[in-house]
Image 1 (cartoon, rainbow, N blue to C red):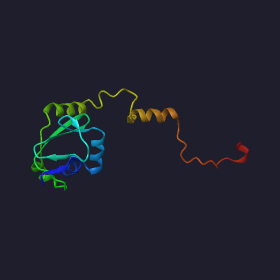
Image 2: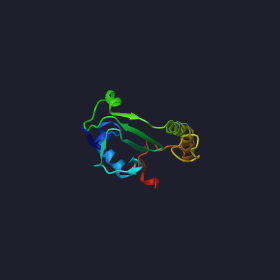
Image 3: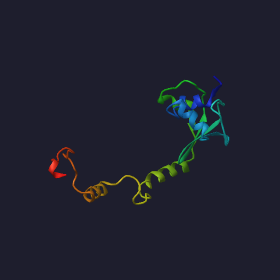
Length: 139
């Protein structure tokens, strides 16, 4: 096989988990070849470079073999060569490290300490409370 559809190749090469996710990524402009956006039906050839943007990183893959049937993970080195620049991986590492540091206070889920403070502020819980526990005289 000399050519393959780019959406099928991305799925078969295990870059995307499903073909529909690959198609969505292509349609949203996250897959490029030679700096140009492509369509899912674009045919790819051996030697071409496909760039896939999975924020915050843009991965680059040189096609070594065109396939349209998914292969096992052990065969991936025969299918493509990862030529992603090292600075992209540094960007990924920096993003991973700074994930919690840069979070503004008060955004996201409350911490355990904040949750306890909220529970204390709200007051005692109403566990075991039944709306029919009142007598007519209580009203």
